[in-house]
Length: 211
Length: 363
View 1: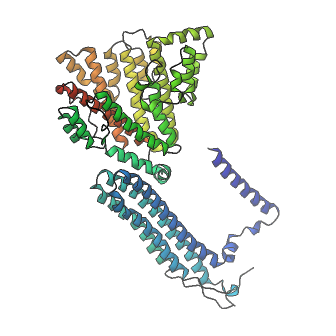
View 2: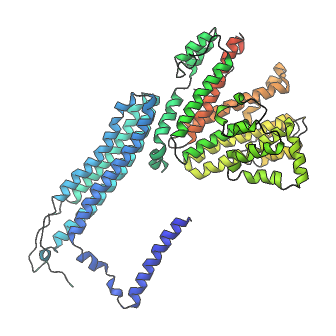
View 3: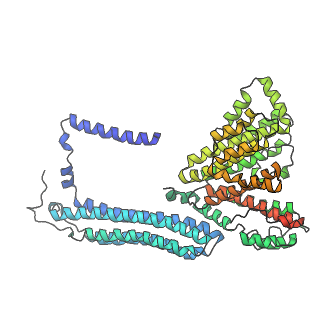
């Protein structure tokens, strides 16, 4: 095991154990309360995190895919300039992945409405918060992996096209199947918030936090 | 996972080297080259390929050495472009490729012009003034990059420094004989192959796979060549065994048998144990009974088979993307192509058209 892995895992585990034992031995073990954490965290946190992850991971995937493909197109295009125009389609497939992220970001952010603190903590609002978080995570990861897949396939398509022009369409079919993955993420993300209402103020009696 | 980060530093260069590779001569090019009547036709045919007008400024009549030199210069220019645009670890990998040529450029008595241009290093002119054997050892083995390769100096140090000083001077004085220069050269080459093999393992999965198969064959080829060339010479069997690299399919069992071998039949037996090498000696038996080639003919055929196998393995390297083996393979394949066109040019120049097809086609 390398020095870096050993230090990072070891130090983290050590700190976690120290904190846990401290809580245990100073009679505040009950401070570690997952249920309370979930109830007390504002649904806005979950919602905003979800939207941020959605667009952030999608753009990461798209950018990664574009540089993977772009480097190979540039290299192959030195000797075979004809590939540079046709292979822009691989770049477009990667870009589409980022567009999916933007669309979902816009759809999700329409659920964010301001609600005063005292009326925030209703069942429906919790549901919306969690749905936005996990929906955003799903879309983000799907788009990240889709961008990677299209990027690697696009890089191979560029080099194959430079060697033999008849290969381009065949490798493009592989890329098309890869880009469908992002679409799947988009569909599931939409389904996940299908039943989530936007953030609405509840009546004061229902929405107080238990201390 | 190598595909995710390879393109950051080396994607552009991989595209460039694949572009170079697509410009290598194909069967149709060779067909038109072999039909040339004079070297001027030859030059015209070559100008239609990626070689372009590389012979444009040469005075006619052309000589085949000029053609070979200019073609090699093209390869060197391409390699230097790749080398100057690369970063670690690719730059170190490309340096390793040049070390092999540096080892072959060792003789201080040869003219600098006969040295392979890829192996020229900065202190090379200083070599020509080294008359004392210790200066020779110092400059060739210690000051070249070879001397600072990790893992290489221990081998040489144990060979030269463990002995008492008197015998060291005595053995160094023997260096002036040709045979011992060959021993030094082969020892250094053995260390280089093993070092390159280990370096390829540290780089990663696909590069390691591709380079291991190529370098293993290279090691086996040297082992077999050293064995065959040392029959009937003063090289003792212990000395011979020390020159065999510790990598390859023939290591360790085949190496042990080859160290004790006395004739070519034993070499054939060893090679039959390895599937890929069985065919190296196959037809030589029938050819020997047919045309009485003798040992020299067998060796020439063997050398041809080795080249074909090397070309085959280097072509396979291009089937994998996101690895450094393509750079090594391109250099070797281009070299083979230069040997091919030199051969064809020689056959045209000397009007020996019956053997003009004796080259090894690449693609």
